[in-house]
Length: 67
Image 1 (cartoon, helix red, strand yellow):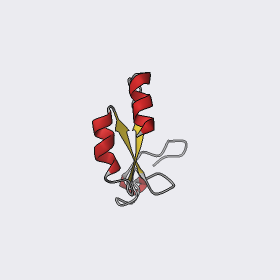
Image 2: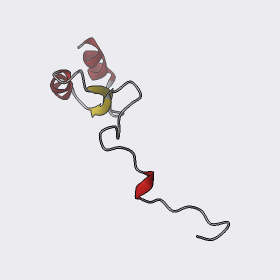
Image 3: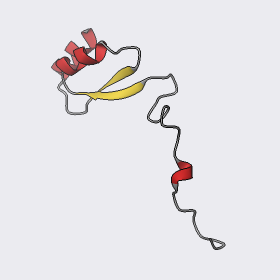
Image 4: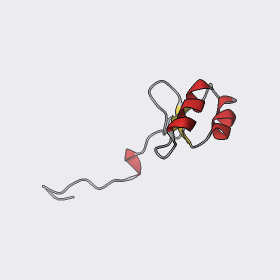
């Protein structure tokens, strides 16, 4: 390591395996593309939360939000 050099990423910068990809509220975010995927995710609603994908139409979004 030399003065003025940027630190390289190493294994020490990683987070705990149990808390990796976890939101501050304790949920893990999952990308959902259709109502069927949302139904499967709702069975695990204590661990996971859904994020509606970018390419989902407004009609399908409305159906998802009503669920």
